Image (cartoon, rainbow, N blue to C red; front, side, top):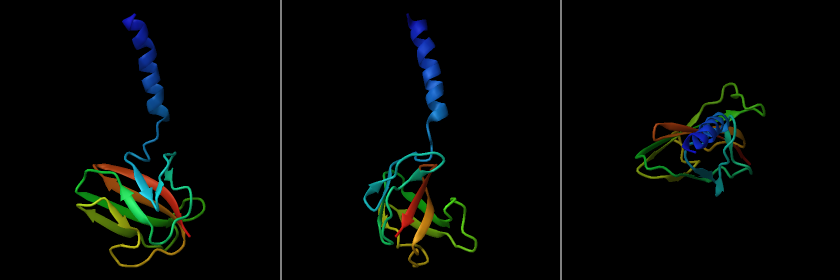
Length: 127
C-alpha cells in the first residue's frame, strides 16, 4: 500500500514543481492589491497611484526594490533609469519614496523585490 501511495505522490510532486511559478516567492501588495502569481511575472491587476503603498511580507531586515519602466511587450524602455527603494527594518513604504526622490511617471513597470535571498518579479501600471 505504501508503494502504491508513493507511486502517485512522487509524480504529482514532480508535476507541481514543473507548473508552479516562482515569480512570487513571498506575498507582495501594491496599492492595497495583492500581486497574483503568474508566469513569467506576477501581476498587480489594476493601475495604482504614483504614491501607492508597497507592502512586502518578509522577515528580512533589508528589502531591495527596483522598478523599471517597460513597454506593452514588457521590454525595458530605452533610456529609462530604474528607481530603487530600500526598506531597512520595515516592510511597508510608498513607491514615491525612491532613493533619488523622483516620482515615477504614468506607465507600465516591472518591479523586482529582493528579500530572503529570493526575488519577486511583478508587473504593474501607474495611472
